[in-house]
Amino acid sequence: MNTTTRNDVKQLASVIENLARQVQEKADNGGDLIALSEELVRNNVSFIFTIGEVFALERAGLVGKTVTGTTVSNPNQTARNYSNHHNVRDSRGRFTRKP
Image (cartoon, rainbow, N blue to C red; front, side):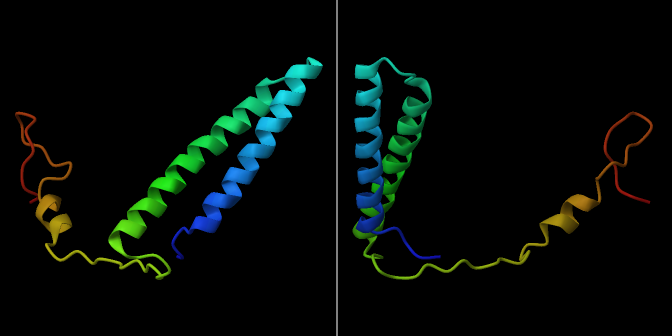
């Protein structure tokens, strides 16, 4: 997965600018503002998160680097530890070990 760059921020800013112009035109012409306003809000939220991501990556020095995910196995065998008490109850209704 590639990290977010300043170009992504610029693209979102231009989309927001275009939507804001369309909202102004609809307001002047008496058109329906709800759909455009909702789209504008969605893009504004995406813009805020993208700016935050760019800021965090620049602060960490990861700009321009590729981020890779690592699949973690179950090193502590947690599923085995909890499997002894899964859906097995004694006569009083408390969880107990499997027979």
